[in-house]
Amino acid sequence: MRIGVLAVQGAFAEHIAAVERLGAEAFEIRQLRDITEPFDGLILPGGESTVMKKLLRELGLFEPLKEKIEQGMPVLGTCAGMILLAREIDGGELPCFGTMDITVKRNAYGRQLGSFVCEEQFAGKDITMRFIRAPYVSETGRNTEILAVHDGKIVAVRQDDQLAAAFHPELTDDSTVYELFFRMIEKKLAA
Ligand code: GLN
Image (cartoon, rainbow, N blue to C red; front, side):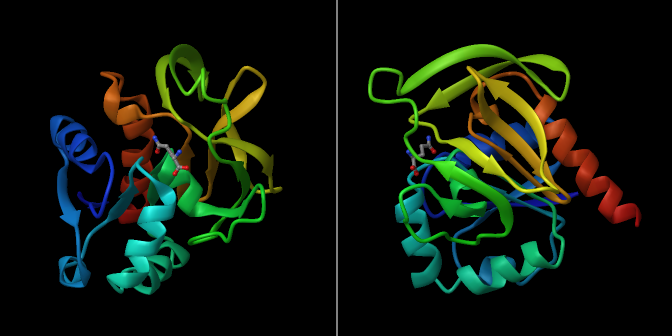
């Protein structure tokens, strides 16, 4: 299983370390030529979504990656990565890939609660979640499965081959989110 991690900005190194720790292969996607070899899954990391959005276009990565997601390549978006997947961004900002039927609110917890750690259920299992100037999901479409809620707000969702979390699974030891993502990839590979 070979997973590409968007590495133009943000917490990509931590995702690569986590994927490798769990026994899969990860590589950095920095430019177009990095995606000429086949791969099986895509991770969009946390960072600054507005910067990533701009760099994706400038580097010519936007169209080919959007196409891969639309064609069903399993994708995991965390924090800013979730914002990149969202069909709508609260406040009218233009979406990036817009492939996931969710509306997100950016920097949704206010300044004081900008960063925090909590324990919540993810797909029925208690895990530690680390939030950093995180978004939450304010609306979901009909095909979107809600996987986690914190403080009454949706913080993890799945829609077919797309998985998104407002928190940072790459910054804790818990592998639950990756395990689900790996299962999504395995299922695809077996199909
Ligand atoms: N606040 C960031 C954004 O809106 C997301 C924060 C993060 O990814 N840790 O892009």
